[in-house]
Length: 368
Length: 244
Image (tube, rainbow over all chains, first blue to last red; front, side, top):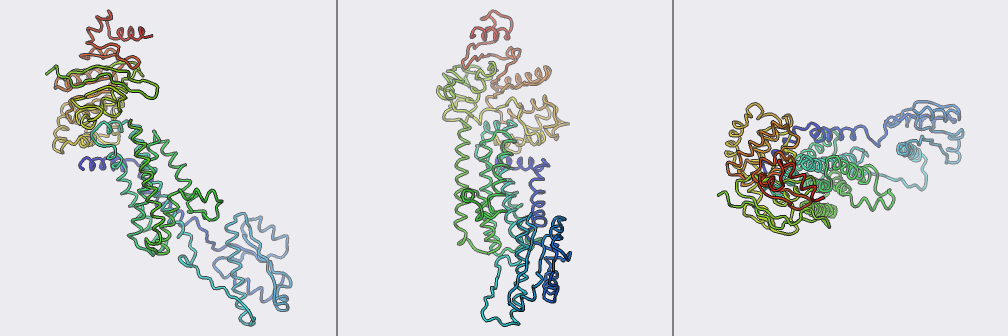
């Protein structure tokens, strides 16, 4: 035990004396949460749009006012001919144009039916889609208001309610994702690098010749990173609660337990990587290419898994991060207990045991 | 006491697939002896040594180190030997003092004992000014000396040195050999691999490995007589040529 404490102390000296690892450990998590939280967002605010109002009457004016008054859109320009539509899009600031036909109001009053054209700049498809939805819903809203005065015999009014994230804040989906990426990075990459470093320096050989057992060496290398990763997880959760007002509906204890489970999973992956790489550089490349990309792209962090092609959906199942993201979203946003996420938890446990088993096997082969 | 064997090796063999790295070597090393383990690069001396220090399992044969069997008691062997690799592996980002404390610790020395040993080392090597410096900032010669002292920290019966003088200037090499003699006088057996033939002259006995086999084993003086040459260098060259 005393040997072990000495070992861990040494490990902390390594970490605290290396500015680069300090930065990766503590600077990056905060920077990433801030970046993802503030800069990357699916929401639209103050989008510049233009109107081409051929009808020019009270109804269209009312609609224009309603749209301009919302916080999502700013009325930048009134257009007066068809050619101008093309030119405002080309200039790039205007993201959408609303066109009212000449007989817009006439049709509305005489035929009880009229149409309005929404033209959006789809160079950025996601934004275009969102703009479309927002504009349509404002129009629908307006329609409901006038329908009330008119008494239409049959009508279905959809009353939508968005649960768990009513304001559709994108930060709520990014925080679990960022937390996953950071824990994966810190745990897997840093441990694999620190283990391969000992190999490179030749100190691993000295350790293997000494009475300290190989599993004690590995545990000693891994333990400080469990500790630091837990601190990181706490910092990220605190940032998301106090800066991004993210709720934690479920139990903090369960959240902590699942995080530690995921950290251990990532660490065992790190150990596995270190058994197959002999230099720090290889370890880093494998961690970055083999772990970071799948974690970011295939875990459901940025791109929804349901809309991926089938082969990728199948591959996503073997990525631990996918299950962890499901788990933390469920705990933080839905507030569920273990009874609802036991399956995902079990998958993580199984994966962890699997990684550890292969690492032990590989490690033994290397010693032969 | 001089006659007790601390290392006893019989037909020790290591194969990697079809390749025989170490081919049935047999020798013994006496207590307090400085045993030179010579051979060209790739002759199999590092592999042989790795089997003796318990980090590589022999394919066949027998070997006892400090009265423990390499097959069954490698953990006991580890407690009784010291090892210094050709990289002088110390932690560059730890100070001299921290390195001593760490390596003493993994050999299970008490805090008091480590403290004692450290003070002794500081006196002997004149480390007063550098004991709190990071090892990374020290010249190679210092690293080598400290690395050797660290290998002796737990007072092992045998110390294994894997090419301990690589890349070091002649004066430092000379000083280093003085340290080896001192350890030997204190009763520690020294098992040293080298490819500097002048260093072979300093050993009590030397073995020369060629292509996995021990081709010669005796005192440097007798070997020179046997091959009718004036230096160990010529002994080595003659041996290597005969094989070809």
